[in-house]
Image (cartoon, rainbow, N blue to C red; front, side, top):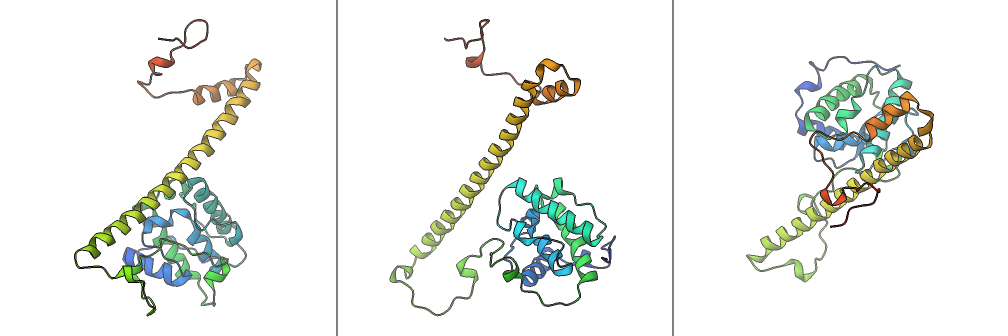
Length: 245
């Protein structure tokens, strides 16, 4: 069904990251500013909807997520779309979701070649297809052409204060982005901790059966790094209670 591409030497290898981002943003009406943002897998899912309609359920795609397990879910949808369209490629999900530039740049270069080989020129409303969701980093107001509307008086500031105000706003924006990132990491941590806790409870339920496989799981679960030692204030005495100092 798909025209497969196994080498990009004669196609998108010659494109810079700026060329790739321009192609992405123009094709599916997004605001990506860095190649690393493609680690969510959402853009590829939408491109597959363009190339092979029906291979991806866009309603299941998480377009604006900062959680790694949701990145993985997006790539699962993409791999399933590859299977349906007979696109011969195993997605290196474990590397892509880490958000490193080189891994994501190599993959998008290959994908651009696949797109060029299979695109039929059909019209496609990308924003409507994803129910109006905006995707990618929001550009700063100074980089966008704004309509000539009346601005509130505080925007006009004395010389010397405008620069400081701009820096403050930029720092506020960075702080908000960091807070969102931290919240996402905390949710991801809690998600995986819950999974580990469920595994631990299951192991404890079948502990008396002495199953070798179960013992191996427990060994992995309680394994610590070399040199790790519990804090002194948590050392247990013989009666099983914490020692008080």
